Image (cartoon, rainbow, N blue to C red; front, side, top):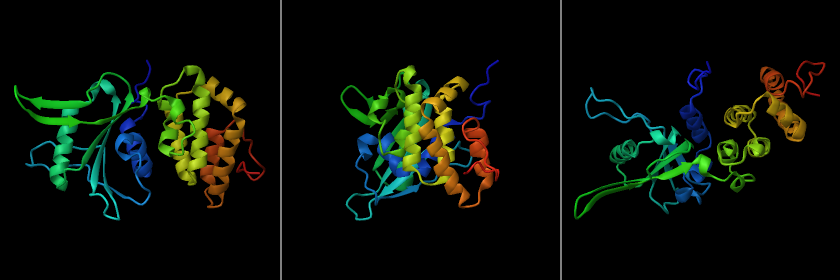
Length: 271
């Protein structure tokens, strides 16, 4: 019997929460492109408390995925709240729940500048607006930015300098025969755009998880894209070794590159 993602310990919610908190600006530029495509580098982004205050102690709490407060230091715009919710299955997304979240957060933070963003991992039918009205008047109109990952053509971001877009290439739309090309471009982007070795390892795992390659695919990848494979190892391993993290180097060698990088005499795999 095949294990479920939960049994395998996969939490898409936590994966995307980590991604957004590690790269908040690129996350908003990508996931909330319609509103934040021109987000400047000098803006200040602060995570907001996830668990909202309860009206009564016995009430259930509302927990948001990743609310972010964006502030412009020059005062050119008023601060805005971006409420990002990851939904694995598009069909289970509730716009009513999202509306409640945003209204509660608006009241809590005393602002009307709230941008709701739904990050949909698997495509399907989902609402993008909610309208409450009578016979003569509309009393509420609520809309969201929907980032439907499987609906995004992968070629749009294959050479992007946005690291969040690059590591999400495997989640976008492409023909299966291009899976190794897409995987290679995601890894290439990670090497080019991230200098921190620990984050390289962290989001290498993210790419692997969503690429879903099997053992035969990985063998083909090593054969066809050995340049990227070796570059990732050398750049990451040299950086880590300079900090004395030999245990992580051995992880890279033994777990990520077992058949391509032989151990060196000093046991680190670095030559």
